[in-house]
Length: 505
Ligand SMILES: [Zn+2]
Image (cartoon, rainbow, N blue to C red; front, top):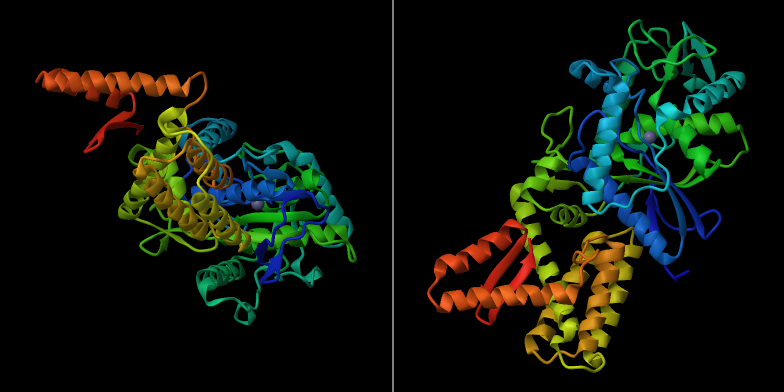
């Protein structure tokens, strides 16, 4: 285990706390996964890249992390007040296919998008519909302990039976001791609370009670037999059940978007802790929440219609540019989307990648032999210290990136001298690979599988030489054709005063 001073901001206590998992080196981490009824958008990228960096850093520190992230394929309604349609069923009806087909299609596409963003796959990706038996069991326990009641084939959690309800979101919102920067959070919780309170009480005893199990209306496709008749689970109980099934009674970390603090996570706590009974350990030690992606200050989301799917975004900006863009803001701060901001991130990405390539080319025998220069050794050590300090500060990726870009400047200075030793290049290269690649997940590796990199570079040098020959012979059509055909396969040639270089797009 690496020595560290990691502190995280815990939504439950509203404090910055030293990270100490229950049984180190093991860490059990659950993050609310996507509801699979449409393509992932930039908002999803913010959430899953944020938690990807958290997992990567914990593993880098030496923790043995079990990362569970569910797939919600049933029970997530269009309205948080237990009314409205199931989102997956609604999408299936529009396309006249079975809901499971929608869930399957968008689950696959979700993983494809996340793979492109270099987001590590969770260790376990449980489907809600695969855990109906466990959900029914938890509902039974809550009924038996008097925390739930049945009404007309549905079962509701009795909020009045659980005095701790509201501890996470701070139902008395004005008493919340939150930092000024958390106003968006506060506002969102307030709106949600009043939305539920204003909802029709119907068969509920209290407007704040929430569904554990819903009776299936006629024509509802996703339904299962239960002691209360045919129905389907509530969205909140799915996460409680899947988290505890794979990580035990208490989770070290539960993550999700801030819009899920209330009601989703508040309800998860109530179900888990009420079922465990008084005196039992709590459901979650650290609650971590990521902020949202905004467009001109407004939340980006499917329901608002102002979202950009990742697939559309990838047409304009390579996935690593989007990853870099997301990491430029703290996970607890909003990320404001604009084309200009992404174009700026693209420039940054090229700077980082070109430097990594330059260092790699030097490693092919381009520089004089010998160990790393002492001044560079010192700079790298100082950069590492600053990088870890940033990451220990509640995963401050923006500051960590700033350290990396300082190092880019240093690397380019060294490369520019022309006399950098291979030892210096190797030290800088491995530092970028570890801090930028392993921890921040920026894929600085050049395609390796089945490719001899030295050979590849030599082959491109031959093409560059042939193009130069063509230009000298004033055969510009030939020279342009070489450049154009390389461009078509994703290789860019750049003419600089010092000669022509190549890079991947
Ligand atoms: Zn969840």
